[in-house]
Length: 144
Image 1 (spheres, helix red, strand yellow):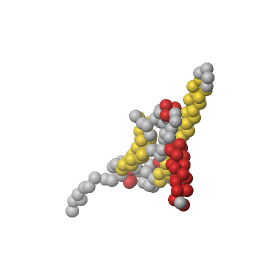
Image 2: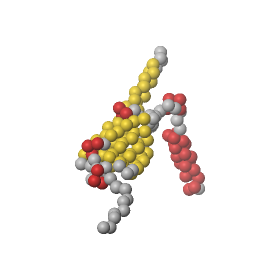
Image 3: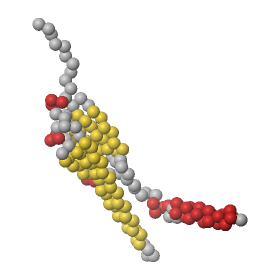
């Protein structure tokens, strides 16, 4: 008998779960853009480090890049507002998204010459190495 008392509670729980996990107005949210922390690739080349930040949907004006004591911080804040009006209702949507990633750079970089560019949803940060830390090609030393 005790098990039968639990049955309605379990049924209600699943109904509540279904209620809160179902979108009743999917057309309102179909084109909603969501941003999480973007994927990042870091590559070390002979003369540079390259950081590629994949952030489709963001423009270069949406990014902020700061350098403080060899800590490079890439962040973005974007706010979108949409409003639709007709005779019977006004619908307003607000979307706010942000992220921040920090990278501790080695002391071997030339912080004064860091460059950034943005193309096709990829933010590319080029971090040159100091001249004395660039690997020199192998050479043979003659014995006299």
